[in-house]
Image (tube, rainbow, N blue to C red):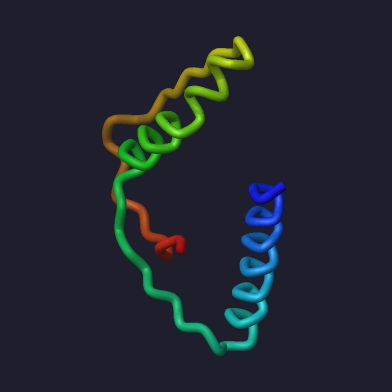
Length: 74
C-alpha cells in the first residue's frame, strides 16, 4: 500500500511540475549524460523483475552516440 501511495504522489508531483514548466514558473536545469550509462542503470534496476517474470531483454546501442541532455529527476 505504501508503495502505491508513493507512486501516486510521484505522478501528482510530475503533473504539477509539467504545469509549472508550461506556465514558465519552473526553470529547467539541463545536465549531460551518456545514454549507455543510463541504459545500464535502468537495466540493473529492472533486471530482478525481468528475471522473476522469467522474461529476457536485450539492448543494442550505437557506439558513437553523442551525450544527451535532460533535467535531473528528483
